[in-house]
Length: 114
Length: 114
Image (cartoon, rainbow over all chains, first blue to last red; front, side, top):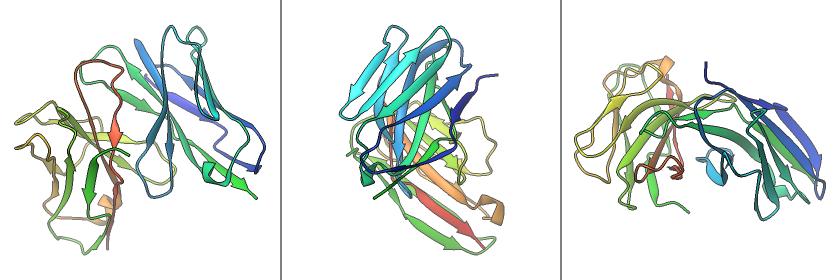
């Protein structure tokens, strides 16, 4: 069964600190892995997209890593800001359909305190 | 900021009413999607469309229906709303056949059925 599991479910950190969010998946055949940021009451916004051959990808203070062998990914946030408070969703695309089928994790709810 | 719009943003309605959630995009994308998301849960695909006059049901069974008469417009209709339909509905679109193509999400419609 294709699944995406994220941990922790929620996380509270102080402004300026770093944090790392985890994602494990069982989706096969694998096409790519995406991290999305979803603010409360809004739609998800893409942060990074990584294919099988990409181990790391950065977008400003966000750095995603991918280990396709162990089927694990992480999202590292550096020097957190209050605006980073949001749900971070790991999404895996399978290669088996022309639809571009996506499998979503439940997200990690990050709260940044001043 | 993606050019994909949803109206209304919030809707509170009584049981048995017919409702239509609007979704439109100005990017010329061929593929469009409807997702349902409950608090703290993953997004579930309920409908998708490959293009004009193409509509398919997604993974999550839904009593809603969709239509795609124009490329830019993908409305979702509930003929008789029930409290079990209370949820957030997210519309998304993407382009081409590449599995790497980003899905752009609208801001969502928060539906409450009393």
